[in-house]
Image (tube, rainbow, N blue to C red; front, side, top):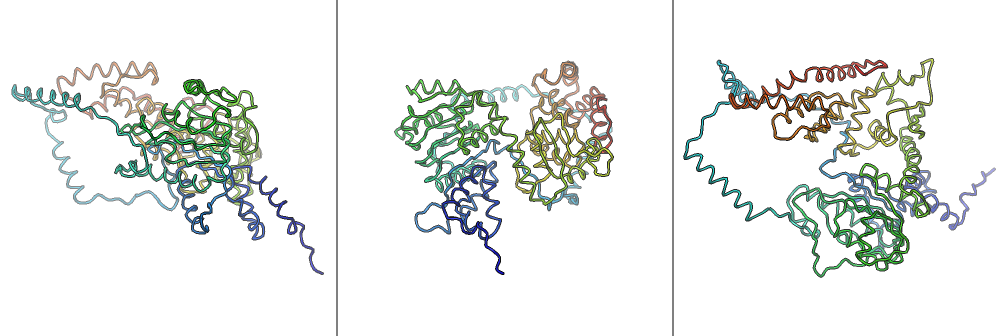
Length: 577
């Protein structure tokens, strides 16, 4: 007897279109999953594959650019390679702050041995510094002769005069060609990012309806150099940070090249004006041919810009822009609501209610991501009423302290399937999960994300992750002294605290009350005492560090003890000692 064919195979194309259109109302995960179900389902859903795209790092942008090259090679004629309707690109981390999770295949370079030249140089240095008299430990100098002093004064005057007559003026880069010609490695990489952005937007320009972009580049280019005409775009959320490269300015005067009208169908525009150049923000407004038919969402700065241009919008919604820390989450939630067809203009207290809608979705997305591991032995972690059901194995392998404290072991009599975590936010826990289960070795973390990873791994005694966080933060040094003290104290890294204290002593930088009034007073007293000694014996860096170690011995010893306790896996309920 022949097996009866499933009704699924006889559905007309119209039904499939309805199903797949509904499946695309997320960040693209559902449709990617459907394409892997079976050859039959893939054949039906492949046309919707890139209907919705969410990109959250430059690494993902470059990987998608590679995929776009493959798609373009299969296109016929002038047909666009993408049918994307919903696109969100979040690149909030300045490129000079990006760091990568190291590949598991690449271990530390523990086999390094100094070369003979290194050893000879070290021996020579040691022999020079090993003087027999006590004075050899301090810097010796000779007084300048009268003629040398006069020569030095003239040279300083010439330098000051040249600086006044020829002040350093940052270069204004206004297009792709100028950025491409720059030989700075930072500019070259920035050129590749802009190029990938432009290429992606051009590939989906005929179908794009909802677009969100948060970008903090090194060099800010006019928006029309990388955003093409988007004739069907209805909703735009944009935040374009000021360039982090101090040697480049945004071209305030564009001459006769006024910004073109790129968004003829736009009906809703949200802008984060806190991080934009005024000129860039005004150029965006010129790209909306009929602004009176557009609903604007923004703060007082945007309202002032509209008033300056004599623009009366169809609707105005006050929107307090979140801090940079929350800007990405807010933008993605705003974009998701637009994808689902929800009109965010009707949400009262918009920014906070939108953020409340984000985390259940993100938790669900993380559960989907971790299903790729195939591990069904899971536990539910509740963080601020948000449930994350994730595999237990990495927690069990990573920290005996965490397992015992939260009764995660299945052999425990008090085994709990639901774990309530305090002193952590959903955002921080999601970040820790991405570090704990790095399914992609190209995942990037910003400096402050590494700080959060360090704090959580220290609090929960994940020694391997803690070591990796410290290693990456070492590579991203130097931090400002105040930040180094704060991170070093919270993460129990005494050498960071010590280096910050030494920097306060060495330089003219005033001590900061943020490090604590007691430490501030001790540093000021120590600096005053050492300055009088330097006038007699000269400056000695080793002696300064020794004095700081002696003065702050109690604090540094406590940090060393707490760090060692976490390495040993020891724990108790009271960690205040």
